[in-house]
Length: 151
Image (cartoon, rainbow, N blue to C red; front, side, top):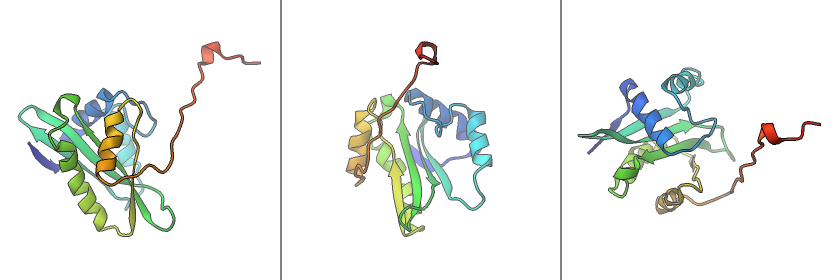
């Protein structure tokens, strides 16, 4: 398995791995076209880098760091690390996080921000092992429009 910087040819694998997680979130592009559109519309000069874990079976994981809005005077990088379910527990997540962390060091002072999801409790444990700490929790609120009283 090797970790390398992502290339255009990796869009499909990245989107597929993300979709396999079953997380629907507006910032998480669900198609290659949507991800390319997000990347095309990113503000010039904003930091954005991705890495992939690749082996004989192809790309099995990726990491991404995208510059967000400053927070308390520090730059922020939104972090995403994802590994295909059958490939977890082999150190790939940590391997994918390492170049992301190293790139962030060049942007000091910086905060790394990541989301973890209740449907993937191992994600919170992974982030904690890297030194992340929970700062707030969000409860999704949904509305079934077909069943909602509209008066």
